[in-house]
Length: 142
Image (cartoon, rainbow, N blue to C red; front, top):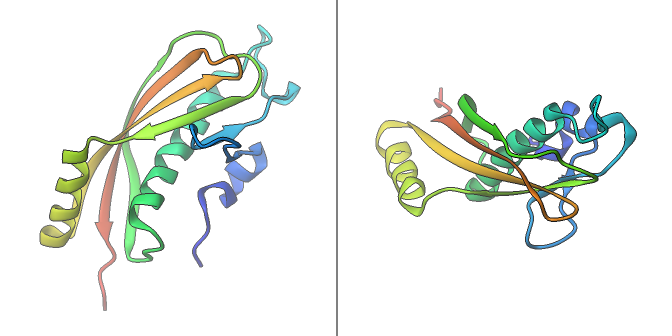
């Protein structure tokens, strides 16, 4: 059964949803449940939105392929400033990395690709950056 990133149980529990504008990928609405001791968006919410966004980026690249098995291998993250209100994401990968991914999947059945995610709060402040290294392999056919 194939589900979307926003339907994954933890992401659904948090309320991660597709962004309401075309400039962003996913968003997490504001709410008191997401706040830290300073009254700003908890670091965990930003990191979770970033991880979900990197997965959503990959899903959009691969489409509905059930034969692709992605797993996060490593993450590098930087919290830039406190986030206030709802938070939104963008995600990208270098075109050369996407091309290498497709070639390596075809030739070796596996590859690693870095996906860069940026998080912004509702004021437009750039609050978080992360790069997720995804290990991707093709499901072996029996």
